[in-house]
Length: 171
Image (cartoon, rainbow, N blue to C red; front, side, top):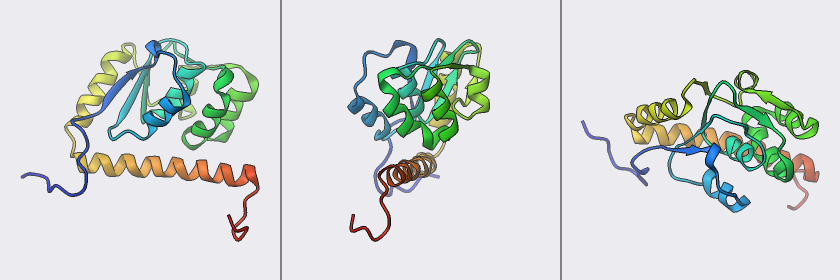
């Protein structure tokens, strides 16, 4: 049975982003990562700080090695806070942003920043991508769109709370 074609069709499948090998990123690069038309799976086997921490909170799924650490957003603190709160919650991101401490992979998994810890994150991320590619593209699109929409609602709420916007203020 073939799937009905309705609306736009997602590309062939998910892609894996190696956070250990990121070139210098700009905020517009991260915005493009979040606005993509496919599922992104980040993988890391080393420290995630600065731009790699920002990318870690922007990808849809995250697979890491057992020695991966997270923290020290540096100049990326604003991006990490805005994107990370909708994913891991305000207390997790506040801890990383304000304390300048690092957390290990097991803590990141427990706190919801990581999906899978694997001794070989590259192979595990690719296996996950292959599994997702076998699913209905329509079903995957619906799931990812809803997940991103939920995170986006938190970004909007943060903006409302931060700027003091209230319903009926004319904005």
